[in-house]
Amino acid sequence: MKVALASFAHPHAASYARILTSLPDVEVLSADPDGAAAPDPGPRGLAFAVEHGVPYVDTYDELFAWGPDAVVVTSENAYHRPLVERAAAEGVHVLCEKPLAIEVADAEAMVEACRAAAVILMTAYPVRFAPSYARLRATVEAGRVGDLFAVLGTNNGQIPHAQRQWFTDPELAGGGALVDHTVHCADLIDGLTGGVEATRVYAAANHILHADKGVSVETGGLVTITYANGLMATIDCSWSQPDNAPTWGGLTLQVTGTRGSIEIAPFAPRVGGTDATGEVHIPVGADLDGLMLAEFLTGVRANTPVQPDGQVGLRTLRIVDAARRSARAGQPVDL
Image (cartoon, rainbow, N blue to C red; front, side, top):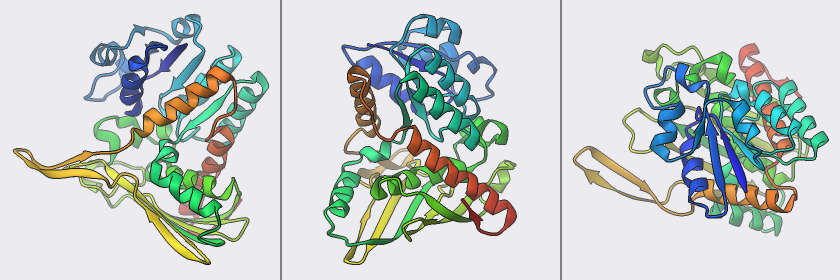
């Protein structure tokens, strides 16, 4: 199987490159034509490819001329749509980083392009593949928690612009913490409810956190979501981890129903300690990126649907879009 890696803008590109190049039945080719102009301290473009042992070409034209079976899109959010639509036009299956797009209309166009071309569009939500989430979902589906009525999610992390400055560029990212961190918890809720639509979103956000960095996008936020089935969810999506924290952050999800409550923390298992540099945090457990890529590649080989798909990406983006509008207006937004 031939898998293209389109752009190194997203930090997950490093993980995907490592996993894909380790698979004996997968050929990999990459391109990052925008990398040379990126203001990031870390490598982009050819330098990144050499560091991670990935074959490289200079342009997306060369990348698609190679004839890939699938492409992993890890560009800046603003460039997701043109890359996904090009892949669809050439009959190439797609795994696209989250959020699916910056604007809802772009995501709708991407979903339709892939549907019309009969190619897979998967949204990159690796936490779906955490063993603790799988157990939670099985417990909920078995009715052991009863009817769900409340979810409390947290997705707190470091501000990512030290690695990739585009994350705090509103034109390239579409926003800040509301865009970057709301979607993961929203995806997990989507999986638990079977895709029940959100009907109302109320969000508050500011950029008090990391004010010394001079960023204009929101760095802290709280999003409350009402779903069509009456479920109420609250998501803390802040970049609240300090720069010197030993890990990027973490995610939790507390689910409450009429028969009980369960909380998971997929990134909590770790080996902790100290060394000469200070506190050490070494994660242990399943490689969620690897599990997600395995699901995607299995779908590509069999040409069968995979989850979370483009529709999930679209539903979660609608929540993000409503949260942005609500935070600006200071009042709830109906979907």
